[in-house]
Image (cartoon, rainbow, N blue to C red; front, side, top):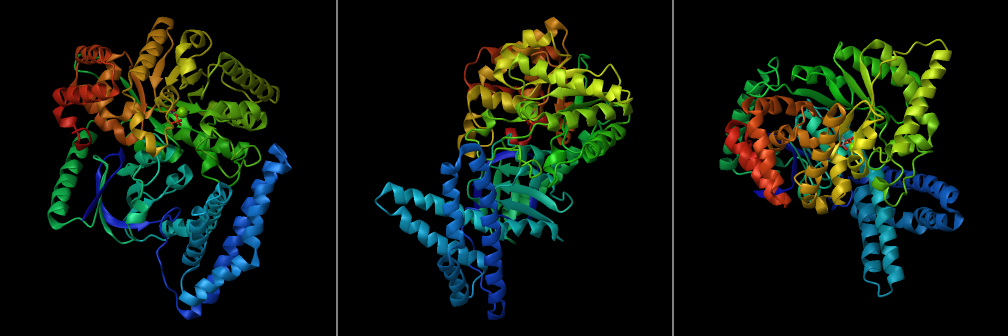
Length: 587
Ligand code: PEP
Ligand code: MG
């Protein structure tokens, strides 16, 4: 039995066999093949090399166009290596001599090169070792990226183990068979983590080397409350976890019975609980869990889920499906928030995959304002869909007032065009913005004059306030909603919103974490948009506390200046106020 600890991002316990689906950066297992298969393995090597060279050629052309031929030359060198017949011969010889799979042959030949370059005294050659490492990853991704097809062919429940998954890969996981997710990379609010939470399965990220330590078929316990993966658990551990899983199921059932009860504190303060979604298909289960509407629809997922860019009509159909599923309940559509860790295949021409600092780069509203065709196409679809039900439009990542003005101007222009074409558009659509950049939080008073509502996006607000990449597992302990600077910004935005009569909600993952509910209520927030599986527990907490209690918690926290003290205080307060709601994750 071995235990590994990571960052818990979706609670619950799963006991299931492992399905290891990723091989990047992990030791590729040595698997032999019968002599009759070696020719087929040669072909797999050739195909993977060809596909990798094609990928590199695309990157080379993009680099040449944006940065010039000189810099693009490095990719010509890489392509040349992949096409070098001596290298291809080495891969084939490895397959023939040891009767191993294409991936093992590629891995071991490249590894020898990497090792010899790494030992070289000249830094120039040591750097070439990094290039080869990169080529090795690229070719392996071609060969074992197909590991994802193992998911498609899955016939039994399994816990997915991977080095990393993109948000779109995670979004495509089949929830009926995937019982848990454990991955090496990522932080608490990486988009992969958010999606795993939305799937409602236990999930752990930032495990570092779980994909290397686990083999497909290993028995696993995934403890999404404490962030533990237990490989080959002993009988006593298994028994204990089976009991815990049973009592969690019972507790979840009892929370679900709250579906039709209002989210109201003991002293009668009404709170609105809406859902964060990525796809319209998440709406019926969210309503089942008690969602009062959708407070954040991440519309970029229609791009992430497809290999080609969706047309205006396809986007329109998707939005209408969401509006219909809500049957009159409100829907806040956030305009496309692509870039950084959300890089779909379909708009390669406008995405710069080589950006040095993509979270500070051309993402989100910036990408839209620099690519008006993309933006206008979406806005046309949104405004056409608005005829079918109550929607609000929200712009992401606004960092200065000019961006808000420009985005609203584009929206007005699209509306005029539609009306000129005889399409009627409701004229009372609220237009709001996310507050997820410190500059917007600090300047909220100015934004309040030009926006219909605010939604605080703490996932990004935290990363930009404390300068910690939300998806980087190596610095994940520095990323915390309990940081006093983050809490101050939220407090300020709520204060400005109240004074200016601007409706404000909070849609970051912070609102889904039980230990923050009382603080947020105490700070004055009354609208939360959260991942659907978190709705029942959040409602249970709200119904168990009084506003006075929450205000006292907020005052207590205001007197603390370290995130550790604040986090501990919040856990302690929750434990005192709602002992039943304290899950193992906060214990
Ligand atoms: C946020 O940043 O808090 C947010 C809700 O948006 P996303 O997680 O999609 O970046
Ligand atoms: Mg965000």
